[in-house]
Amino acid sequence: MAFLLIRYTSGVDYGLFVIAQSTILLLVSAQNSLVTGPLSLLAPQRPPADRGEMIGAIEADQRRIQKWLAVAAFVVVALGYLIGAWSGVVTVVGLVTITAAWATLSANSFRMILLIYSRTQDLLRVDVLYVGLAIAGAVIAISVPKHVSFAGHAFRVVHRRMGRVGAGRRGAHRQPASRIEC
Image 1: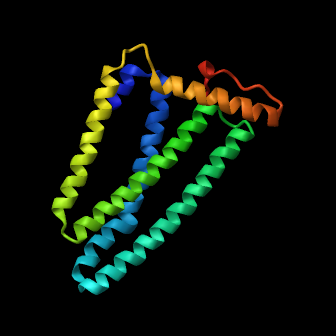
Image 2: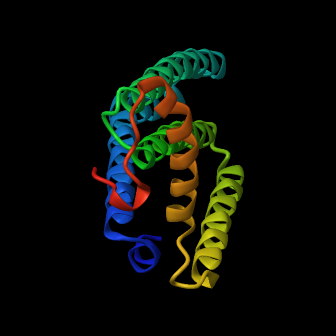
Image 3: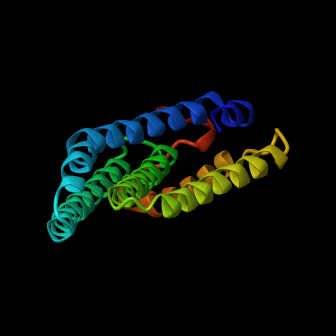
């Protein structure tokens, strides 16, 4: 996917993708180190009732923590935009990154539960679905002409809409999307 982005997007768009991808990778690594790794070693050794209780408690805590972290991150991104700290494009990328990170952490947690319960067939089905979606996204990206940048166009549209809403509150005009500074 990175090769497609290099070909079809600008350097700034690709840089934002790399930052977002690195953030998600960092969060998944932290989850694997702090939760998934220890749980995958301890839970299979427990009796089924204790295993279910252990996994349920950890999943409930993880959901609660992820929810609060996501809410805090959304607030930080929104406030950053409203005070003019970053552009509409960076704001949209931030919001998409938060959503993608939450989905990735949830999927990683679900995969771990399937592995602990030795449901390898279900895990394989989930992974095949994920690969199928990634291939479909790549095919769509490849079929788009090089001069068309869906990401850039979407960012510009959202930026214009957010600029209209935010400009009235701040009393300032936002810079055009073609002059984005990260």
